[in-house]
Image (cartoon, rainbow over all chains, first blue to last red; front, side, top):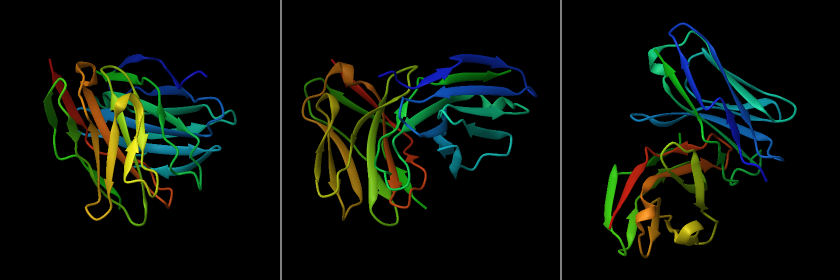
Length: 116
Length: 113
């Protein structure tokens, strides 16, 4: 079974631009979560989608948004990029849904975003 | 609000010795607990999860974790460390109410040959 696929692997953007990251979950997984990883802050939760509905949301500004499509693929968008947005963005899929919260997350290898 | 604490930024252990990576948690209600490992430039890989009623859980690559409800801890253990175990280890928790999965800050494990 193919794992979680994130594209692109690397991105370099300048301040003020916007960026869209893509995530394809494991086949059959309907839950997709996004995390921002930085050396000082660890993994910070962005949002979680299940069956195209946002189920949970982290404490990030409105510049960070996401969506999930009917095939469970997900995208996240960051507008008006700031230098502090430079990070590894990780996507994870799982069988989790209401009532299956103990299903583990399966992570992609991430998108490394550098904002200059 | 749920939280996870990993009190050690780094753990150093000699190859062949037992290792322990510590984790304590706070949730309302019963916890779903997990351990993940991350190698450089890669995503996180699932190692093991707590199963209700089992105080000692076995996982991948010879790792196990000890659950202690009274101390709200879920420490990761391995009887004999390998150099290839050197990586970043994350503890994570989710409560029964299907809140987000919260991760600890991570502990860097260094196994010395």
